Every structure is written in structure tokens, then in C-alpha cells.
Image 1 (tube, helix red, strand yellow):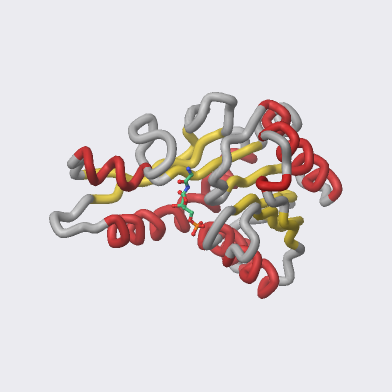
Image 2: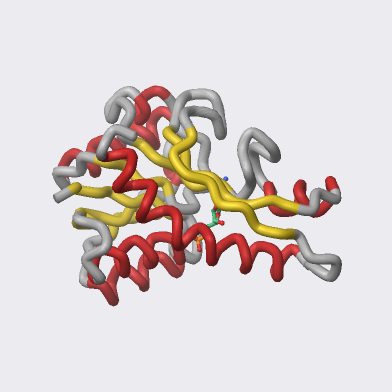
Length: 189
Ligand code: GAR
């Protein structure tokens, strides 16, 4: 049983997809804790519905990224977490977190990396006029949106797409590949 700690900043639909995959016995894991950084994030309400403990670590209350990450590490360790799952975590992480869980931190990004790194990846893809984009699950290293790619899925960009319609279509693929990627990464693939 993989002991997961999930980190989310907003809606938490990827967190929910992981919880659902576990409930459906498609992923042999357990979510030990949900960490979130924005008060009122919908992810926290989802955690409550699943009976998963959640902890708010509001980045605005920390002096710098390292101080936030130190609190994250402490909370994850307190909850006996082995694998860290960044599911819509919108903060840059530092070696303080990365070195505490070597090769055991995964992130999901809404583009086919290495294209469109950073914030607003879906917006970047629309602006670039690409006809295919998608999503990527990768290991987290200090360089943002780099690190070994575990799984990717392609998503077509349709002529009438808006940010919202395209991101909705990407989300569907994210929810499918994230549980798979966690299992594959844990198997060392
Ligand atoms: C997801 O599309 C994820 O790929 C993206 O935020 C969304 C979170 O959705 N992450 C990033 O852009 C990371 N830079 P969710 O809260 O519904 O899971």
C-alpha cells in the first residue's frame, strides 16, 4: 500500500480522481493527508467528504519558499507519507522538500512537456496555435517542470476552444493518467 500525501491549491479534481481510483481498487494506495495552501480551496471540502485529513499551510504566512517547504515536510512526515503527489500545487518547491523525498515526488502539468512550462500552460498552448497539447506526470526536480516523464496523454485543440473548454478536456485525461502514473512510478518505471 502506497502511502500518499497529496498537495493541492484549488479545485482538487485530480486529488478526487486519485481518491476515486483508490476506492475502485485501481490503485493500491492510501491518501494519508491533503495539504492545501489557499484557505477555502475546494480540495479541502473534497477531503472532508472522503474522510481524509487535510492541513492548511498558507504560504502567505511563511517568510519564504524554504520555510513553507520545511512546514510541508514536517506535516508529511507526521502523517507517515512516502510518496508526495502534487495535484494542482501552484507554488514552486525548493530542495528543502525535494531532498526530503528523493525521487518520490510527482507533479501533473497541463501540457506535453517540455512544451509550455510554468504557469498558464493551457493559455500558452492556445496562444501558440498548437493543434495537439495534453498533460504530463513527471518526477519533481529543482528545475521547474522538468524531471523524468512518467506518463503523458495527448489532447486535440479544437478550432472553437476557449481556455475553459480546452482545460476541461485536459482534465479528463489528467484524471485518467495520474493514478496510472503513481502506480508506474512506484514500480520504478
Ligand atoms: C491541473 O490541470 C494541473 O495540471 C494544473 O492545475 C490544474 C489543477 O486542477 N497544474 C499546474 O498548472 C501546475 N503548474 P485540479 O485542482 O482540479 O486538480
